[in-house]
Image 1 (tube, rainbow, N blue to C red):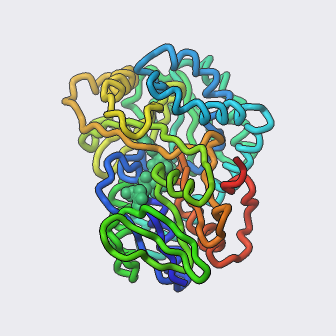
Image 2: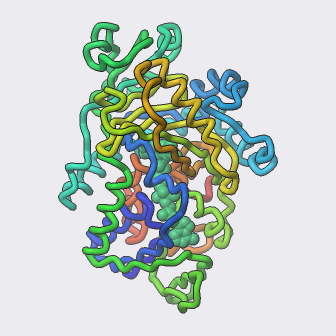
Image 3: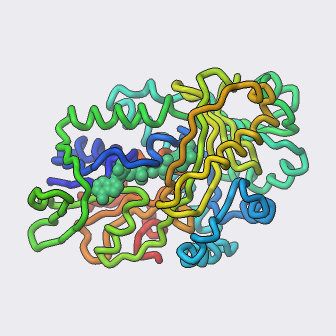
Length: 411
Ligand SMILES: Cc1cc2nc3c(=O)[nH]c(=O)nc-3n(C[C@H](O)[C@H](O)[C@H](O)COP(=O)(O)OP(=O)(O)OC[C@H]3O[C@@H](n4cnc5c(N)ncnc54)[C@H](O)[C@@H]3O)c2cc1C
């Protein structure tokens, strides 16, 4: 089949390779140059050990404190509130105990397959060198907060996820640069990538080498016809014709899905980061600073601190006071950072759905158009497994996973 993929972020690129593996012709429609595309600036975690949706008890516990602080881990810009209301209503609905349980089950079902799918994709392309497998550490400033998180840790263990609580001496031995940490849990099976932008660049280069056809344009209209699906692009070229179309354009997918009659509650949780020269933090593995809303990663290209959630849409300029506030909070844990020069700062658009589950499945009006977007905080983690699911959907084969939680028609 000839399959057109709209959007060559990490999700679209993984899908391109999975389709090429099965012998399909792939057309990659990607304008390039989109500012804030999260594929390039994310934290690089393969966070397959995470099981909690954003609408979780942990978020609700911290929410009042976060919202009180205009530069805290979670903010809604007041001017954006009216646009966000439908999303917030869905978020609230996704917060009932039964819906949270359902989200956890679905997140676990897809995350359980995430790392094996990445390993198989990377090794088939001779890119396994991008994977760093030395675990991830969650740390708490106060033991009380750690004790209040036991339910989440127990939930992870109940799924067979290894989570090793560390003594203060063990924390100091593992990460001697860390200060003011009273408790920590090591997830030895979690991992990260060398650098998300480098990984994406390698995947793109190899997809083109394997025969994917690049179309440097912005897809503007999708028209299913009897025998084919047409994709119109900006510029004057005639419409592209394909047997099937995959929409993997991150946050920019919403308008395309709306053309096919699917109104998806997709909004952006804007995230921020700062990247310092490699080795600045003196930390050897990724760290989640629990309750603080940021993480650090020792990437090959630099030490990154990233996180925060800001609801402000696609148009508002970045507010890097948020990045500065995040760095300031990080200095509590890494005091030596005070004396370091300012880092490179970035803001990107997570494509987020209120129940923290991506949309993977056919369009309501025509099953030859397949959605693969809305991965929120887990787009890198879930890209490879998404590519497998999408390829089975393209070929109309049994997928081997309950897809009901992921279909567009769940809204
Ligand atoms: C601060 C931060 C940290 C994060 N950390 C992690 C992490 O550690 N681990 C993790 O798993 N996830 C993480 N994420 C989330 C992850 O980065 C995203 O979920 C993921 O990048 C989404 O990938 P995507 O391919 O769906 O979308 P994108 O990266 O947005 O790519 C979409 C592509 O579609 C193209 N496009 C848009 N419109 C059109 C159009 N009309 N026609 C053609 N092409 C189009 C764009 O140019 C772009 O290349 C983080 C995100 C942020 C912001």
